Image (cartoon, rainbow, N blue to C red; front, side, top):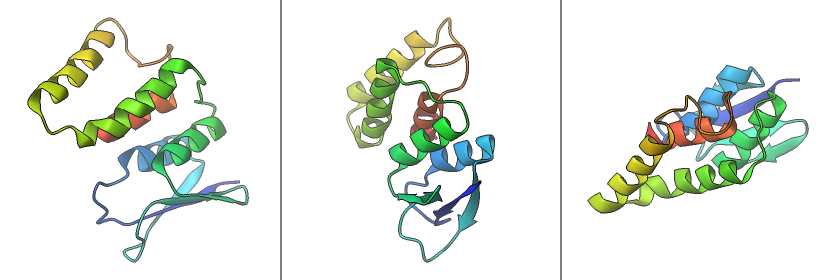
Length: 124
């Protein structure tokens, strides 16, 4: 059963990761509501309201979940990226990502995972 992802088209920051993983997995229908104040996912009788929880839930439902310590660290990085204001902080974080991806296609493992979506959404 597909869930419903409700989000505002004018949300700032826009929940790119949630929208992308919902579309990619097909596990949630996007509902653009200008009256919405945040992003919410209603799936399997539960209601999720944080982007981290939504991305993890949709990744698990779509078979993309990878429960590793690396995934947790990338979720923390994605949460902190928008808060960086000093140039050295930004370049250090992006250099770390660049170094990690130098010989890899995906952040964790050999396939798309929730970590890829959440970091992409933070960078977008």
